[in-house]
Length: 351
Figure 1 (tube, helix red, strand yellow):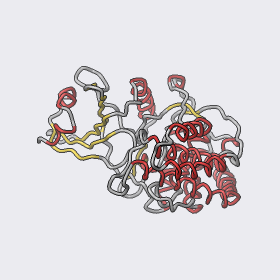
Figure 2 (tube, rainbow, N blue to C red):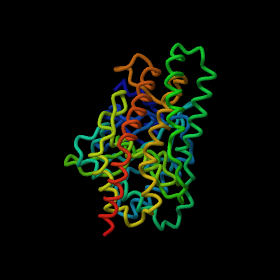
Figure 3 (cartoon, one colour):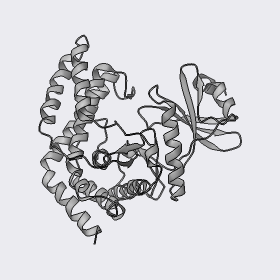
Figure 4 (tube, rainbow, N blue to C red):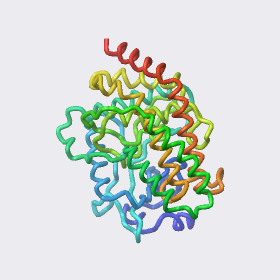
């Protein structure tokens, strides 16, 4: 098979002792390039070419977390060692790794609201594995969410990229993001917990019956305030139109099912302060991600893009930014109802 040599270096396959039978590019994922491969021994694996920002420390963190998940009886893809006992292979400027393949389906949009309940329960099980874990200190403090930092990145991108052909359009929309950010509620800091770090819908694996199997893409595991994790999850799951359109909304129906799924397990460890912070966190994460997408509409260097639907990386990320802000505005108009859902669901599941 000549095609595999064009995209998958022979040295990678040799390092793992693989004889390749088939391979296909995975369609999900914005950071790492990913393939599902099948060897001539009929075993399937996930092969990834890692983004430059994924360093060796990330591998150690993934290994620690997956071992903990397995000890707790939870399913998780696991890193595969090379014949030399390493967990990645360096070829030129690129690093490659292999993970075990867990069968299932990922979605960018929920097929129905029942999937939201399943996703909520799966995320709570993941978080439960970090409760009372003696080796929790081995994980890094996550810096995934910091809206002030991303607003600064956007400001710098606007200043340094005035030559970009879409600068004027992006700058006008950026003003809307800055204005909305100034209205965001101020939360309180909670003790950090073990989190996935990127619990968007496409990182939840489902079986054919709609049951949640596990969380995938563990590059962002770490310690973080739980409200940011939940805010990121619900902003993704409760947008019924996905991230590749500006015509987005926030579904209270999906939200209620997702919160209920999480609360059935999460009520055992979540604090009242974390419960109160859920809806404000969703608003904040929407705004933060809008700023990130907006900045990359000028920088065009971080998020991947879909050339089949958009003419450029810039145009795709600009649409993504608009979609995040429209969902944020919709949630703001429904904030009271959303907070009532959270209070009612956690009150019910705790009794």
